[in-house]
Length: 468
Image 1: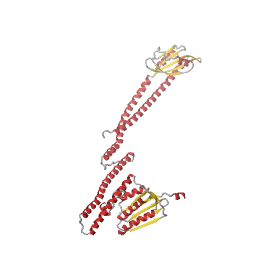
Image 2: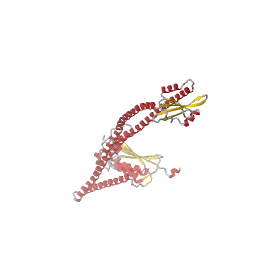
Image 3: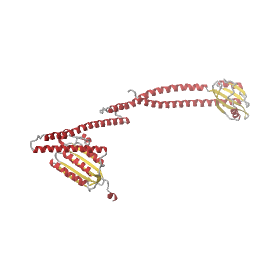
């Protein structure tokens, strides 16, 4: 996977977040260690100061003993009088350095308070300084300063900080490797999808993604597969549409051209034969006109430019009228065409001409694909809807082809299309017209048992009914 910019971006984000967390955690741990050592040494230094103050107040303790104890405790002590003069000094700190003796602190000590602070000597070494009063007969006679170097504490902190830094570097390198693996793992499906979509865009519509995950990536892969299938279906339908329209136009044109040539050259023997040719020319001209009209209507419907004259339509009268028109063809084929009506007749808000076209197309389709038996047309009224059913006992439609029967030029019996006639646009026009008028059409079918079309229109109550 070259130029995997998704993995780089994803990895950079993960590493950046991890690095921020790691630095914050390191600083927090370092601060905790520093605070722990600082508090501990400050407490120890204050306790030593208190101990030295007790020793200084004792009559049995000599100055030499205090010096020895100070050297043993590895601290420096300064015993200072009220005039800031050093009475006693012991320890490694230079006795000439008196900067840690500040007048404000000295006043507080002689007032009976204790002071604690950090002092940095001339050499740069830092000290914990604890100042405490020395009493004699309940009066403060001097101040005792105890100085403890922070050097050992800083060495201990450094010793503890180095393993933390090494651990942090190790954790960062480990996270870097894990992040690379995670980024590659997460970005690989996206790259596969990218390659698949490029193939689809280039025209390879058979491309499919094989991802079984149930997460968002799996849903996206399935959406790409669905898109590819839809595009493939659209391409195949378009090619079939072009082939069908060419065939449907070529056939009547061939008949018209051939028979007009026969009539023009007077290649007929009798007037009866001439009339037969004229009838064929007339039928093919009607067929061509119907095809062009259907294509024109379908194009206007898909563009949303068809005009509907919506008004109150008496479905009972309209349906019976269309049934009477289809009776002649059904009688010629020996079919029994029945009409049934249930409920109280109610009008619907629709285009009468287009409603007639819908019912007539369904009836002609039923008659065309039914060889024997009967065709039932039923109209059912309810308080909220009108249901129209056209059911035949014809050849039926295979279940896997039902989703496509409303597509343009789709025929179940493609090899017998010329035998059954029609333009292949009737059901597509029916579906468009039903939906444009706010209805729903469904179809159920079984092979060799028949097909059932149901059209339902939600009835809008009239002003009079609404007032009631």
